Image (cartoon, rainbow, N blue to C red; front, side, top):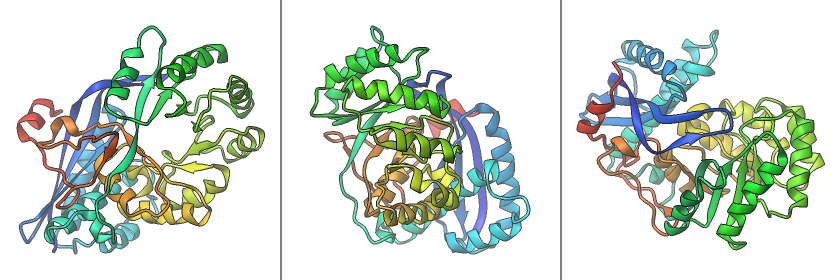
Length: 356
C-alpha cells in the first residue's frame, strides 16, 4: 500500500468525567483524529490526545502539510519512520512533531491490520486477550468523590488509581484512607502525584504515606518527569514502588530513565506510536521492569497483548465518545479487537464536536 492522503481533524471530545489533577482540570478531551487514506482503498485511523486545545490547530496544520510530503510513499510504518527521521533530523522529533508522527504511526499500523483483516496485535505475534485494567481517576476529594469509587467497584475494577497533591500530606493520607477503606485490601491502590514535587518533598510525603500503611502498589511521577537524579534519590529513599514513563520521549528516554523506576508506563503519542512502544517495552523487559499503558485504551490493548512484561492497562477512555463502537470493560478487563485497532468514527458525533 501507498499513502494517498493524511486527513486530520480537531475536536473536543466529551468525557464521562473531567480529568482532574491538583493543578488543573480537563473537562473535554482535545483530540486530533488522524485518517490515512491508502491507494488500495484502506483507511488507517488513530487519534492524538493534545492535552490542551492550543495544540489542536498546529497539529492539524502540520499533518495536513505532511500529507503532501508523504503522498505516494510506502505505507509501511518502518519506511515512513525512516523517511521522516531524515526529514526532521535537524529539528528533532519531540513535542508537536513527535506527537504528530506517533499518531501517524498508529494510523499506519491500523491500516496494516485492516489490509489483512487482522487485529494489530496479531501483526506482533499475539492474539487478543483479556487485560486487567485499573480505573484511572482524577483528584480524589473526600466527601465529594466517593460515588466515583463506588462506580469503579461496580464495574469490576480490581485496581484503582487516584491523583493527589493537597497542600499537606495529612490531607493526602486522609483521602487515601477513605479510598482504601472503600476498596478493601484485596484491590490494588495507586497514587499519581503528576510531577508535583521536588525530590525532598516527594521523599517526605511518601515516607509519611508508608507510615500510614496504605499498601500502595506504586506512587506515580512524584517528581518532574525529566529529573533523573530526583527519581534516583526518591527510589533509593523509599520502599514504595515508583512509576514513571508517560512523559518519556521516544525509546531513548526509556533507556535513560529505566534504571530509576520500578514500573514503566509509556504513552503511545510520546514514545513514538506502536513502533516506539515495542522498542521501549523491550528496554524495560531487559531491566526487569513491568510495563503498563497511559491513555489510548484501543492501541494499548493491542500493545499489551503482545508485550511479555505487560502489567496493567490504564482505563481512561478519551475517544470513545466519538466512536461507533467504543471499547468496553468486562469484569475489569479489556480485550483488543480488530480489524486493525478496532477504531471507527461515528461521523455524526464527530461533527458535533469539531473545532473550526
